[in-house]
Image (tube, rainbow, N blue to C red):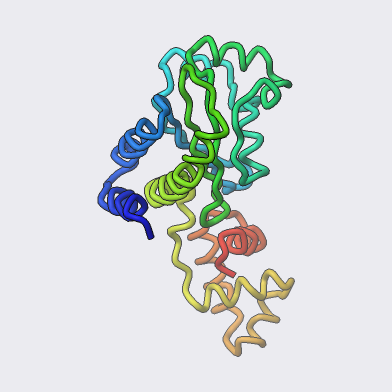
Length: 236
């Protein structure tokens, strides 16, 4: 592994807290020629209300406009990140369906940029977006910096996930006992409490005790929802 990679890994290992990690990311982004950066994480759970967290140093006026106009819902870079892991370089074509959005972003100084999506644990989607106000990204620059950009996106999103996933998806911190997991696995198979009691050779009331504990820990309303939630979290 090259010295640059080792240095960056060490930097991110020593950071404590999402803001400190973002500051480290911003410094590295600037060294790579980008004055603005944004780190976002999209958590798929709970399925009824997926959440997104964003830390950015984009111009304040643009941040306010983005929130006020709910640009998250139409942002082409967001749509791209949700379905692809490939780098997206900003261009008129990339923003063809949202010309007003693109024009306003450029007016705010976000004229040149790229988005680097990543996939993490629990199906969390991370994205590092880098931008600057001028000087288009040439093929020579991209070839020279592509690996470092991809490496930065990976370690930044890995670091951010350690800080943000517990906040975005509290259920990922849940610890279920072996008995609770066993009961939920059979619930997922469509078995009744009586069936599960026979399979596990324990009393039916004990089965219900374990299932109710799992329902409470997972914050669901019934056993089926608990089994689904546990499966989505990779516990089953």
